[in-house]
Length: 172
Image 1 (cartoon, one colour):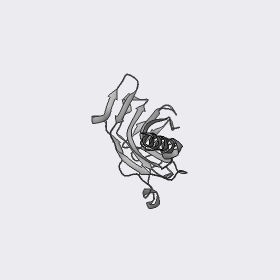
Image 2: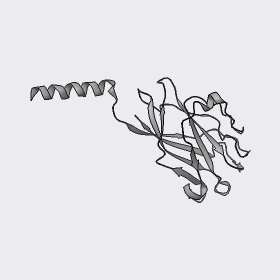
Image 3: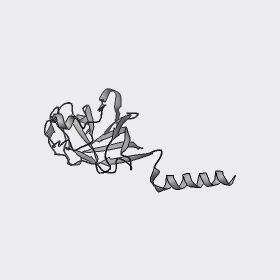
Image 4: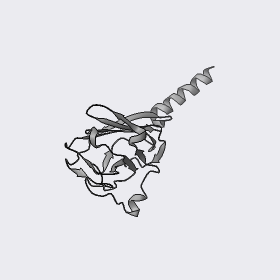
């Protein structure tokens, strides 16, 4: 019996000393600084969005969910969110056209938020949300995740804080 107790104690010490087995879910919320102007199809809304703390010691995780809260329910369009393991160098109000080197850091999958399927309408705001995405990633401890929101058509924002991005990550 004492041998079992010692084994449990040794395992407990290993887990609490940085073994980090298992995972936690963590939510991140961003209000990217956008331009109060019209955006065209293919343009980045808010540029590169840095997700600090998007991993634990081993650097792996899974993009689980995403929601976008839009200021203007009258001008809602489909939006796509791409994830990268390095800064994709996206700029606000500029068509996002990544190089091959940047595309090599893209996490497989993209969260396409569709008005027909993913929209919840409220009086002054609309929410596009999608869950159970399951996009796995692996990054070095010194790296960060990045997100880029791309417009699928013309949309006009009247406030520099007119978009809120919420991302749910499963950190392994």
